[in-house]
Length: 416
Image (cartoon, rainbow, N blue to C red; front, side):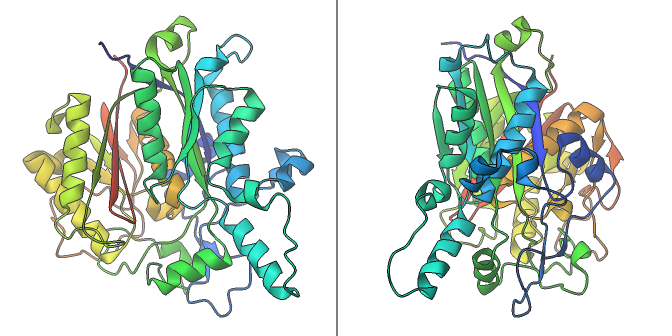
């Protein structure tokens, strides 16, 4: 059977550096850091006292107060970003066949704050189980797409993918395949996360995963720099409307890009550490290229996973050199996590949006905070350091990897 072409027709972003896709893009190309001291709770006894929180965001500016109270922050973020993407797509919700519109969403953790608060409240009591009746529906990771579909009446496939930090990239690949195979006309996809909490910060600190550069939060996320010391936790959401090309064309939709391929692999190596030779990453990029029917030399830009961890950055760049060979030095490589921090389950969607906008505007956002060269990194690679670079991006790749060895890769192409 002939696979259908799949295109991007709507984007929505709620991030630590911008609360809309346009604000997000403006901050990206200007190298703005979203890291700052944590405001959500007292960090006096925490090793890391900063994160990339949302700025000037109130859920009740977008959602009914009663409805907002029934949602964990990760669901609130999903609702706001998906509303922006749906509005951006200009879908006629009265005309579209809602049985053929799905919502496939990614979340690595889900309602962590809800779980944390309910358990802490129980622990303070006399042992009587007085739990909020919304505890479970606020906490479960699948509730974000459920709420999106309820609001808009979308009755197609509806579920959440959970693969740690690869979750929203997995969601996009599933959405791609549902449309390719003719099961859906439209899928609202992406991911959200709200892990800047006592439990989230404490847990990642216990793993020694986070930067502890408390004296300079805005420079703490420094992918590929010799002095990197861990990632900076971020929060937010990214939403993408994917659509059958013929369906989009028939309604005169604006098309941002075509989604031409998705790849998946596993490191099969360690719970949290990447394979030192990047074997799973090599496999996922090759899988993605094959799935797209593209050659390595077709790729102009790679938005890396690039978390600013000592092991992960080197392993990913080794893998890029292996897959792309001599062409690797011709690619604009970057890590937008240097600005947004690591949005965990939302990372793949947010970074895909950055890749799509780089293609639309002909500018690759920088990898900021780079000061010291890492001698273990190939100096011929163009890591787009500290300043955005103009580039006619015809094909862009977005890499996303998660604890457990999950690897996902998505390829976008300028529409012919």
